[in-house]
Image: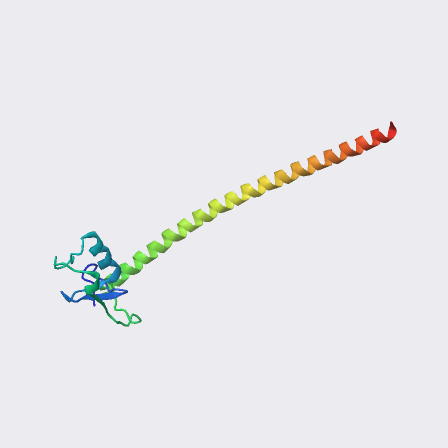
Amino acid sequence: MYCAISGEVPQEPVVSRKSGHLFERRLISKSLAASDGVCPVTGEPLAADDLLPVAADLAVRPRPLAATSLPAMLALFQNEWDDLVVEAHATKQQLHATRKELSHALYQHDAACRVIARLVKERDDARAAAAAGTGAV
């Protein structure tokens, strides 16, 4: 059971009452909306009401056509490995940038705390000097 539009096994299969072709629901819905209700395979008028849902067991999905031979499977595994390596590299770069940003934010926070502590000390010293000066007069 393959979709007539994508050629892949549909996640939510529907079949056309008029032509008998099998489609993925989201793909045929987009196609019908874009073509004003014309079937992408036959070119005949097709409405959303003409699509019947197909009850299929999606637990056992057939292998993709690319995974039917040993060289094809090796190529598939190589592509997946390459994708994982690229994703890991991007994640490491994002982690490095986040650590750098966090370090900068912590440095700014520490500097702000020191300035606040110095100002509080100066204020308290000024209050103590003012209280000592007022009591002496």
